[in-house]
Image (cartoon, rainbow, N blue to C red; front, side, top):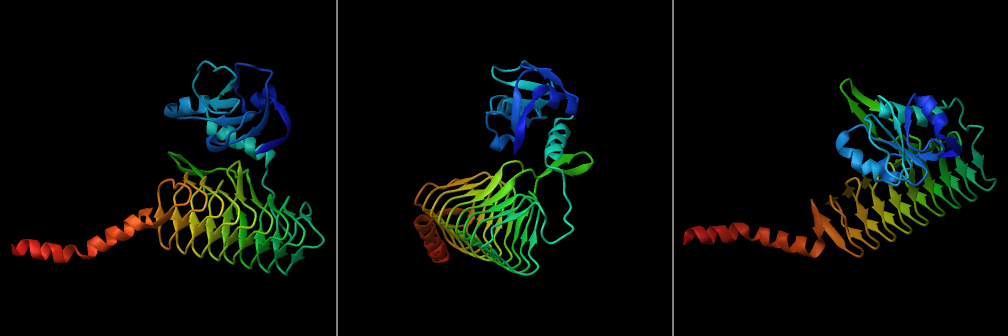
Length: 311
């Protein structure tokens, strides 16, 4: 999530009641969890085994709960509860805005867009020219649509990230500070759900077509001209390349990279990265040719065992 203006570190420290370690003249330009950080961003860490990863990340500012020396190019903010500080910062720049009307007045809708009855359009939504939003669809806050996007009835775009901080008292919900960006000529089927990013963006590339009842997790980035059949599910923070085809009921785990021109056959479960141009099948998914050979061999196993024990 990018701030509307650069914010001096002293202002941030005062807001979260933190001690500054390192450069106290730096300014923050955004805030992101560790998977999405860029130079100028704030991130946080509250578990010692992840300190090294956070301190060596691209983030310029790290909120943490243990005094350490600031690495070169980093400013640290020391406080008791880094997660709460981080979440409070997101909330201060992305406050919750309840919706009490069908179309929020901050939404920007191109005159050529077709908006059918009972479409819900949240705060700061942008709908580009020649879009068609069918009846009863929901475009939640900070969703942005390019040109010629089709969203079918009952789709819910911009739902909260499924992201919780585990505490002794239970699970604490993160404030979702990201967006959903649908590029030009994307089609979204009926009943789809697309989570906005935790603090980055969930992105669907130009010309991608998504069937009904598909779920896209937070911070997922999908390339151009992909085709996803019904009931595909993609876990958070996964990157999908261009021209990827996923048949029905494919499941993709979180934090993976799926290469360009990959084909994943129906009912497959993917738990590891896939290189460009591969065809995958099975659960857990493997290269289709190898998997089919294994299944063929397995069918002959009873016959083999029977002849073996007769000897």
